[in-house]
Image: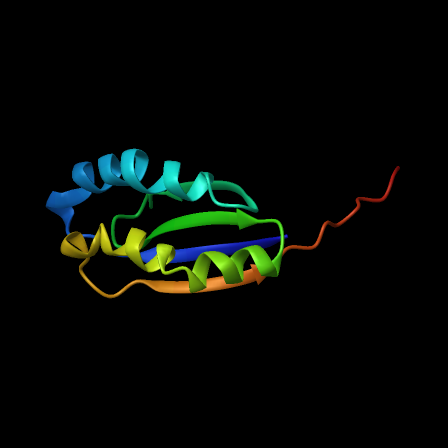
Length: 102
């Protein structure tokens, strides 16, 4: 599994509109993409920190198709007018760690 995290800083007066666009226009479209296992946004407790959009993907091939289609860029651009700085995308492989039985 892969996790993609997009770090975004939004202008303070745009937060309600960002939430609305993310929940109505971005998350539903991302969830419909092949291999998408989930998407959510994390809002910082410390307002000086970034929002983080987290999406989970089954395979690298799924991520590649999503990225090469231009859809990721289209969805991020829906929030461009509200960004205080350019977004930063990071991708991670996720390893399941089995806890030792006691």
